[in-house]
Image (tube, rainbow, N blue to C red; front, side, top):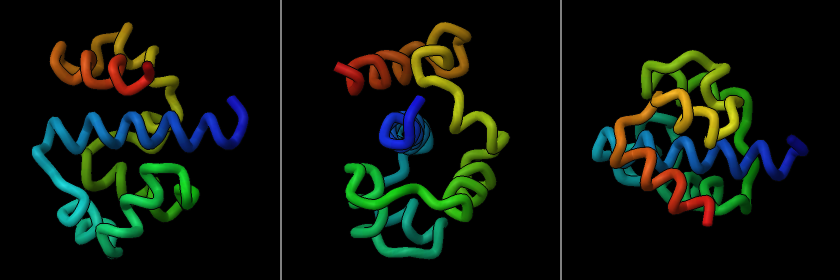
Length: 94
């Protein structure tokens, strides 16, 4: 995966986890110590995920850091998401 693909992949995973935890961009921003606008830019690929962001994401969502670097489709295949989250993830890839 090249750098843009890594960022897109992390964003896909974060979107699904946000849905799973019923978390909006404001809530995620507070958890990460930033504004919702920063979260929005990062999810859209206008800003890169920093290592600090990824460490905080791992803490917020109770996942290992490596989880965010797994290809999103692998997480779906390995059933790391419930069925409805998997559909959201696959749908966002289209």
